[in-house]
Image (cartoon, rainbow, N blue to C red):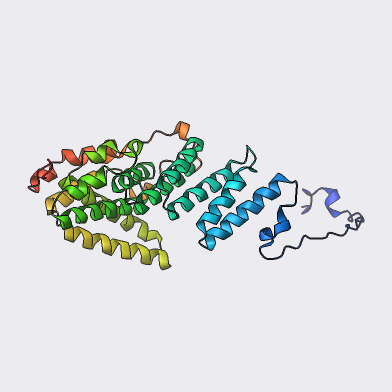
Length: 321
């Protein structure tokens, strides 16, 4: 039997002499720390270099918490960004919006967010945009608009427990503020916050009891998702999950829903939670043109109201002001 019958003869030939090529010397560019801050850095006709210099200056100013200086640098950077460089443009626009947040310029921050929304083309873009809007609304205590943005995040990424947890915390803070003041004046004011185009219609229809119900629902959904995810976690990630689960349990005890309410809400909120298939319906790169996201109301809230748990709890569904 010929052991090597299947090998080509060329495999056993001597290797040909290799020609050694002498490489030309390469002089690496050496940059001093913060070279882009030097006055002579901009003495170049290369638009890409100018874009990088202004971008680096803006990033450094943000790190140093000099937000007006950063905003000016980012504004200059915009002039040198190539039309096809959408990644840098989006990064700079978000940086400008976050600088405006720190500078107390709410409307201008929202204007930059609007520019980002016009260029959003996939799930990743929309997620970043909504997280930016949450930051803007939270900073300026626009609670209803914060709730609306978080609900959109929950609808788009329904198996992300942190969006549900943040929505629950937002409802809880609004509820606690209402209870503290002893009237619905605080609720009415904070539900009608924001610019006219940012006012969510569904938030304006909420009353104290419905906010209580939404808070309960969010913390129940958070528990459901985290209890599944923790089976795959370890180290500090698991510690964060356990801490959040403990907080969610404590909040639900404070909200004191009846056992029948917990069961009804759990049934509705666990309909789409299948432990073996807990994967987001849409991925970061998915085009928005091919995505059909159900609204928060359509997917969960309307079903929750139909359970009749508010009536079972003895809570009136009408405003009690």
